Each structure stands twice: as structure tokens, then as C-alpha cells.
Image (cartoon, rainbow over all chains, first blue to last red; front, side, top):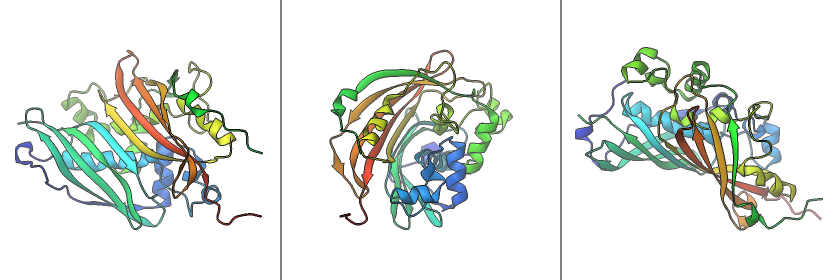
Length: 138
Length: 177
């Protein structure tokens, strides 16, 4: 699981897209893996009572998926420093969320890279944000 | 009948905690997380890879920071935790005034060291901000921001989290008479 070669990176470079099917299994599995038992993440009737058409993904899962998107690209030698996300439209079962990312800043001396990410589904941007990661400097 | 809404600014600030984790950082919860997220980073599941990277034990995905200290299924915190609510306890007060919905809108996590298997995590929190009443597509309510600081068993700060939620009264589908 090797990452990008730091010396070759430039601001504006894009990361490979990553499409993730949003299933009820992922929403419930992510909620339980993050120990979030809020009913809107597993109980459709409870979600509907609050005006939502279906259960929806919890923020800890969205955050975890962002971390996975970055570590898929950055490799095992990278270290996450900071994950800042803002949630937009919900992730409902049956949708697909596609992550895209681009490099916003590079600190050559330290290997610190800021990556802007977007996770978009069929109704809009589910998650937008910035991940700061330190890559090995060779 | 909803309670009257108090002046919410009195709930800004404070120092709540400690709030402990039920379990020390462990390989099973890490694996469950990685399975759900599809995270194949070997630092989290392969002890040899973690050791080669300088960790003494398996590393935990840093985005699990908050997961370790969640109350979980029973809704109770482990013994040794501060009694009562953390900084987001104000949400119950807002809810009692007729705002049942809650949705997370921002999460900002910073990591100072990766947690490893065997670490024991706790956090302390304060309420950083409560907005005036706002109207969004979801309904009418308040944005509440909590700043949580996470520590390990050596009382070292391992990370921080700013968590902002919208506590709201859903838009009525149709006006009642």
C-alpha cells in the first residue's frame, strides 16, 4: 500500500475518484462500528418522524470514509493530521457517493499536504472538507 | 406542552468531564470499523506493518477518535465518568423547548498521535458556541458547537474535536389548524 511520490506532487493535482455504494448495510454498519445508536441511523420510521425519507449516514461514518479515501491514496506511510468536514445533503440508502479530491497546499520541507475533498451523491454534496496529511519526504 | 426556552448563552463555556471509554483501544473494534469503512490501511490490522512503521501495537484509524468514548447501546457512560451531560447536554434543554431533531453539520478533528491497541481514552469538553435561532431547509433551530479534548492513559492530549450540530424543530409538512 504505497502512496504517491511526494517530490512529484503539485498543487492542483487530483486524487483518483472513489465511488461508494450507500446501502442500508453501510449506514447501519458504520453507525454501529462508531457506536452511534441514534435511531435515525437504523430506524426508518424514526427517521421519517423527523421529516427524513429514510435512515441516513451518521457523521462519524462520513468522517471515517473520508479518512479511508485519503489513506487509500496516501498509503501506509502517511499520517493524518487533521480532518475537517462539513455535511451537506444526507446519504440515503440506494444512492452512490463519489469522492474526489485535489491538492490545495504542499509544504516541501515537512511533507505536509492539504487535500480538498468532496463526496457527492445524486442530490448534491454530502461532505466537503480538507484533510491535512503528512507524507514521507524522500 | 414545550418548556420555555431559557437564555441559551448561559450554557456556553464550561469544563465537563472526564468521559471515559468503555473499552481500551482494541483490535476487534478497529477491525469492525475498517470492515464497514472499507479501509485497508495495514497499520490498522497487520501487526507486522504497524511495527515496521514504528508502532508498538496496531494503530487505530485516527478518525475513530470519537468512537472510543461513545456511550453506546445502553446510553450510559462507564464508571469513573463525570455524572451528567457533557457540553452537548444543552441539546436536551433545547429539545424540551420543542426542537426534537438533531443533525451533525461540522466535524473538525486534529490528531497529535495515533492511538494504539491498549490505549485508554477519555475526553473533556466545553461548549464553544450556541447560535441565535436559525431557519434552514430542515427547520428552525440552533447550531451548537462542542470542543472536545481527548487524552490517553498518560494524560497526553491525543486529539481534539470540534463538533457542530443543528438542533431543530422540523418544518411542518402542512400547517395544522
